[in-house]
Amino acid sequence: MPPTNSDIVRLIYDAWSRDQIPGPVQFFDPEIEYVNPPGAIESGTRQGLPEFERALAKTVEVWEYWRAEPEELREAGDSVAAVVRYRTRGKGSGVEMVGRESALWTFRDGKVIRYEWFHGPGDAFDAV
Image (cartoon, rainbow, N blue to C red; front, side, top):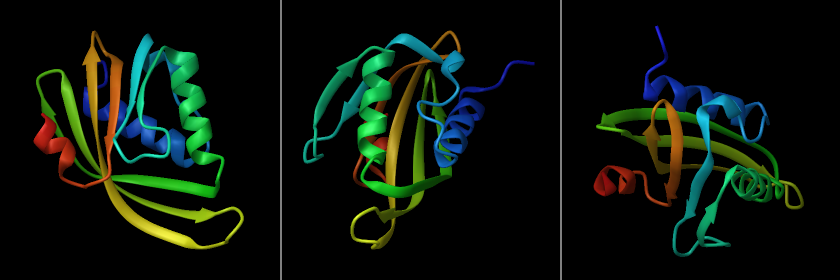
C-alpha cells in the first residue's frame, strides 16, 4: 500500500531532523516550488529540486541543529497542512529556540509539487 500524503510529510520532517536535506527525493517533483513567506530572510518562490535543496540548506546553515516534529497534519484534497514544533540552536550564538510554524504541502501523483511555509502555526490551515 503506497504511503498517504501525510505519511510522506512525516517522512520528510523526519529526514530533515536527521540533517538529511532535501529528504527522500523520490517524493519530490523535479519542478517543485519552494515558497518563503513575506518577512523571511529570503522571501519569495524558488523553482526546481536544485533550488529547493539550496533554499533548505541555506536555511539550516546558520543553525547548529534544527529538529522538527509535526504536531498536527490535516489533509484537504491534494494538500497537507502541517503544524510543526521545532527546536534549534544558533551556530554562532549558541542560543536555543523552540517554536511553532506551519507549512502547506501540495501533492500531485504522490509527489510534492509545492512547499510553502508560514511563520504562524495556524497560517497553513487558513491557506487551505
